[in-house]
Image (cartoon, rainbow, N blue to C red; front, side, top):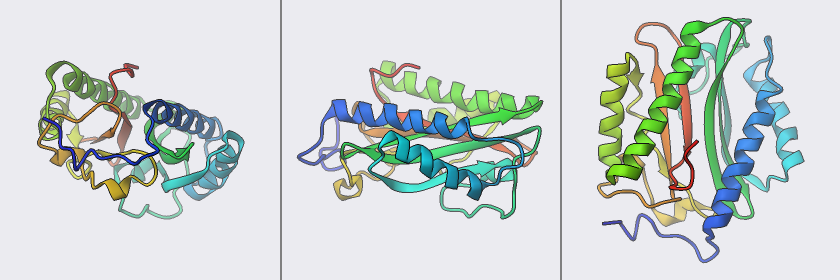
Length: 224
C-alpha cells in the first residue's frame, strides 16, 4: 500500500508537467556536459551552468548545482568539495541538478569520463547499470523503498563496487516538495508510486579515490 501522507502533492501537481521538468532538466545536464573540458574547475562549471539554465527557461533551482570532479565524486550532497580541483586529461566528473520548470521539480544526475580512464568509465557505467536494475525491480516486483536499497547494496557488492548507503533517494513534486513530507525513498516501507520519487545511486571504487553517481525519476514510462 502507498503512504498518502508521504506521497501527498499540491493542487498544481500534473504528472505530464513532472515528465516535462524531467526532460528539460536532462537537457540542461547535457548542455553543461558539452561545456566540460580538461582544466575547468567546479566553480567555473557552475558559472557556465547558469547560462545553460537561462537558455532553457529554468524558473529556479530547488537544490544547489552539484558538479563534482575527480576525488570529489565520492562526496555526498551535504559534504563540501575538496577545493581547487580541476578536471584532468583522464578524469571523471558528475553533474547533479535540481531545477524547476512550470512549477514542477526535475532532479537528474549522471557521471562522465574524459580521456583514457577505463576504471572510471567502468564505475560510471556500473552506476547506470545498477540504477536500471533497481528501477526494473521496482517496476516488476513492486518493492518498497527500503527493499530497493537493500537490493541495490547487494548488487553493488556483487558488481565489485561500494554503494554509498547515505544516499537514499527522495521525493519530488510540484514545487516545493518539502511541504509534502516525503522523506527518503530508502526509508519508505511501501512501494513508491509512479512519478514521485527520485532513485539515487552513488558508487565508489573499493580502494581508489573516485566514484560515480546516477539519479532519475522512478516512472513506468521511463525505461532508458
